[in-house]
Image (cartoon, rainbow, N blue to C red; front, side, top):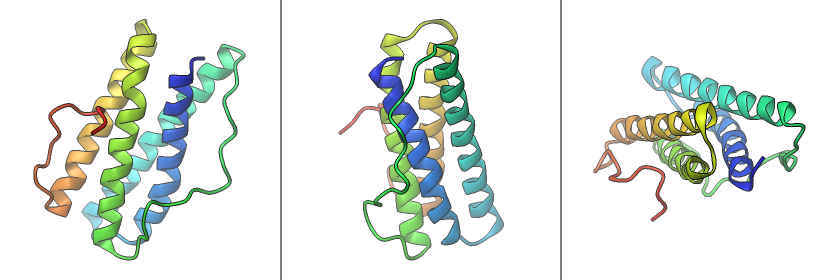
Length: 141
C-alpha cells in the first residue's frame, strides 16, 4: 500500500475521533443525524482500507490513542467549524490517492474525496459559511 493511502487511512481515523467530539456539541435532529451519518461513512472507509491492507498483506502506522484538536470545541459553532475542517482534510488526504490507483481502488478514492467535499458543503451551509463550496475539493490552499 502506498503512503498516500496510509494518509487517507489516518484521515479517516482522525475523522472518526473528531465526530465523537463534534456530536456532543450539536443539537437538533438534523445536526445529530448528519454527524452520525458522517461518522458511519468514515468508519466504512476506514474498514475498507483496513481490509485492503489485509488483502495486500501490508500494514500502516498504528493510530494514536487520541488526537489533538486544532482548537477547543465548546459549542455548536466550534463543532461545525471542526466538521468543516475535518471533511476538507479527508478530501485533501484522498486526492493524492487518485493518481496512484486504478480500477475499483481509484473509484473508491474518488468517491471518498467527493463525499467528503459534499459533507463539508453541508456543514458550511449549516454553519452559514460562505462560500459553501470550494472550487477544487481536496486541493490544499
